[in-house]
Image (tube, rainbow, N blue to C red):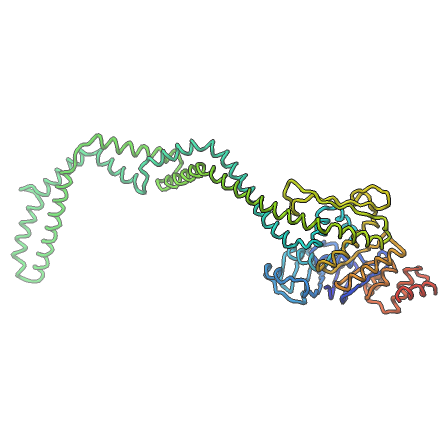
Length: 550
């Protein structure tokens, strides 16, 4: 329920602050007084896109703030999902800055326009001529039928399954496309994988092979140098080990003459041991070295293979080749496994189709069950609104495809006059008739679900007399369970309101201002009299106004 609306620096409004209560509130005013401006300001807090041209003073920001009592709307989950503080008295604020930027807040928490719009749609339903055209849309008609059929839970189940079905359908399409492309590449990828898989790929393999190649390719030089090393170490005349043996004998005799001699003797002994070990290792290496052309060719072949693979795959090192091999393996495996994946996905889709068909059948059953009641209520209500001969033909037929609303095709036809052929609403109903049909539907919906605050913007356009009086009665009756606003030019409707506000323009030093005020009982009499007879109020108009109010 809207409890307060504050508008600053918007269009012709400098500052407006209005409090509202429950029940039926009517808003009147001369054409051009600014009723549309009031709706425009309200639309901003409901999530409509802002327009810089709407600022009254371009150097100051526009602020529109609405306070709502949301205790009955069951919005706790919405606030939780969007990380907002839930307050029974919720305040929505919209700011338009001189720069053109717009900001939105819910209970002082900044929010996106999308969140604001989704919340606004659940707080206030502004009915305008544009919304009347929704009557001709099957989605709106089905929404009405589903409300009467209590299909909310079934529709939620259907929506979940439909989402799964659509996701699985896209996944199957992707698998089939992958299969189509992969078949062409499978043989080539398999060849590349086998080529890499047969190569001796491991980290450091090239360095090891290059070292081995150098040794095998230079075996004569190595053997020559090893022979020279052995001579230098072990020759009886000049061998280092023989000379070091003599040195060790001399130092050994000196070790008893002091600590420094003992330490030097120990060091010489260590050098002798190390050099003797080195000599043995050289001897062992010399024994292993031999010419081996076959091994040299084998190592060279492996190296050339690895060099070619690096060049072929534009890889920096063997590690990168190993990664490429892994990816090729995955592609090959995926291609080989895709057939089973496609089969499993098709089975999954068949199961989902069966579930959707079952839920869709349940939806259709519930809808068909309430069609006679909806038809009767519509025709009875429209009879009261001056369309006594209006009859509806409402039929549901199965659809071959899954729609967002189920598997139903809806035929919603009207015959507005006796003997007239049935036709689509937009083709056979006038603007005034569409307004009355929309009011009838809203009145019926109000019996079955908790509707948000309803604001009817001149829904009584095109009607007059007793019909307008009855429209007022219907809105008044609806206001027993919800908050209703009606912007009207008809005194018969205005007289039905429990609360009456007037929108008017006032000339001031700073320019023309749009203002709004609640009317006292006597002011209502005067306002209704003006609506009946114009500015020159007659006694008969005043009497008629009092009669309407009573």
